[in-house]
Length: 396
Image (cartoon, rainbow, N blue to C red; front, side, top):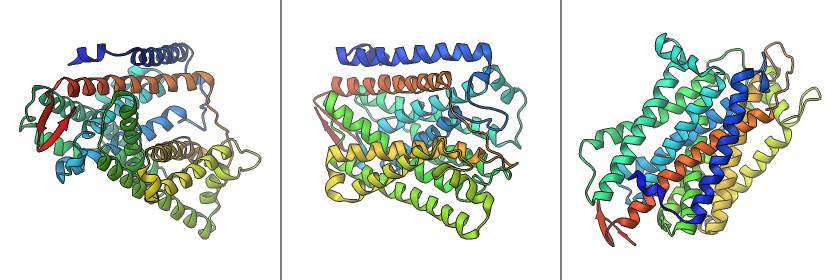
């Protein structure tokens, strides 16, 4: 079926060429980093995780969020998700691939990743993070490709796949819970030292991931005549709304704990992010932008008229996605490292090569997503005029 990705319109090939150009620029920046070292980034002794790990953390959530489509369809027989379930599975494949690439570029010397295999350390959370990410990537590849191939042949997927699908559903939350444990188990970082870190991660994942699926599905509807189904999009939009509200509430609870308790160390990171601290206010505009986007996203999603309108729904989904990226990405990293345990401030700003590498990784993920979605569309187009699959009738 891979050959189906080699057929497309001029717009399709222009988009692929654009992504390949960004990938090339990112690769050149990475070669520069590989030669010189991580000194070309904005990271330092005090800020050892930066833009790479910020995007890694966010994308783990995007990958895990796909379960909010897969679980209702396979576990609860929610058949309205029949046309978009595979979009969620292939989104997870692209997102996990980006996660792995961000870890590799953050290592400086990518060969070091082999040390995880050569010298396994079961007492390290990072050891388990490597395991859950790679297994989740494999599970989604198997599930998505097998189901799509069965649809291409006009048959039902094989019975042996069912346990693997259920395993992928159960496995999905684990990848983000383990990632949250990487943060909340560090006693020297007060911003991360909270028991609600894992629930916050899951709430943001279950909003950002489905939000991206909504954007992708409605974009495919516009450019490729793909009909995801009105009920499916509305149902998924409600999931995004409830999950994102839960994410915002959990952050508000953290604000109450920090400021009502009067503990300076818990307040300092939040002050740095939202109002600045000791003359440093690098990320204040971004955090307030995330706040405004969160308010806009929630309002557009909870009002039925705007949630059911495709234009305002896309705006809401973009607002939720970007708000989660700012808050859970760069906000989480810089807030955790600033101030340092010595109560000093070491500003962090990503450099141009760092941004170039990041854009290259994102472009790689979108290229994978484009190819997989193109195959899905071509398979759907090449089937019979009416294909009956698990009780759902797809009509061209």
